[in-house]
Image (tube, rainbow, N blue to C red; front, top):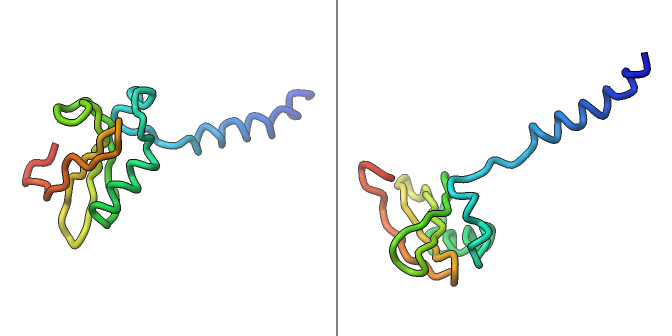
Length: 101
């Protein structure tokens, strides 16, 4: 019955996996971004105060070609705010249309 001593270790390992942060779309591109997620979020929320409901790192025309895209809910409306992943400039800050990406 020596294996019972491993139960706390197995429980801890399982709990750690369950608590792993959710990845975002485009997470595999993060190594190419000079502006990291936390900084990009702060820039986006300064440009459009509200609550971030979705985030993505994507290749898109304009700026450096790599941007953080945030869906932000503010005043009952949805907005899309794009932040250049190279220099942190706000590339987009607009109300989402009826068919958001």
